[in-house]
Length: 376
Image (cartoon, rainbow, N blue to C red; front, side, top):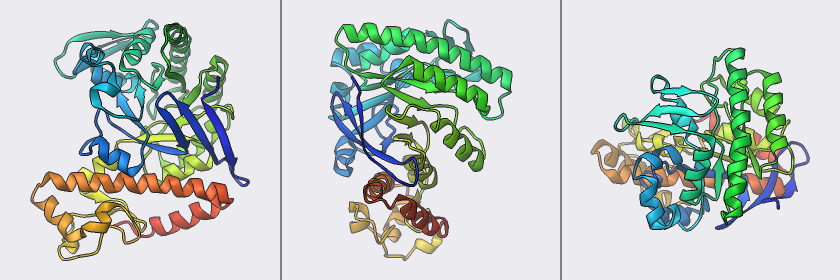
């Protein structure tokens, strides 16, 4: 049974609106998903996220497996009960975090052996165990274990990573189907790899499509490559994916990348950037990003964005936020993070409306013309 329904297609691009049907409520797409690595989106409460309008957030299997441990989460009745988040959870398999620990891990066809970044303890993660861990978490969407290919990787190494990922997908699907037979309701997404080699991307996309998982993610993008290369390979890879599956690009969280993804028929995206930059005093506005800590904001009593309707912009000034930042007050991170996530949620909402009205191309052009002209 499909978890995805396309409700509107843009006439001039690949952009489309849809509905994701998940165990804990439907999700309208395109959708930006906040990242809650440790079972919390940094500096925000569940109530904040619900107030903004999010119904799907991320958590990370690697981090939760190491701390507090799946035995704790299992005893609580799963991640939703542990965190009291009422919406849906998508969980990363942990593969990206494991593979970022290059000096502390070893990859084989069987799985990956790695050392914990917390205490140095050794662990062995297999495709089956990644599924098992995400079943314990109660993930509404779980990702297969994959080998993430970094920017600059050679073709032979990219091919090896692709082959391991494809083999792991078969094993992950078998484990997921077994879990479903025991009552698990979450969906499994396959992941396309292949580095920056189009023939390898074609091969990986074909394997992902053949596996016929409920959704497909595009991996190995936004890994340090130039913007023009990202745009090229995003468009190329998206064109290879089945139309009837939800498409997910991992790790993008700027208006430029989000709107480019939407134009190419991507339905889902996530990134830590909106909350990370907020904690460092940088916020989104329609006139580009704004460094709230700059001296020019000392007596600026305007809101971050005069056209934004979030409670931060309705209530507080740039001067006050700068004061909070300069004095090290936690409230600055809370307010800036709320605004940044509201801004991106509003962006995709406007994009959905433009798709419905047949004006997406004009919306993207006008938004980016103003946004790119104003960052400071």
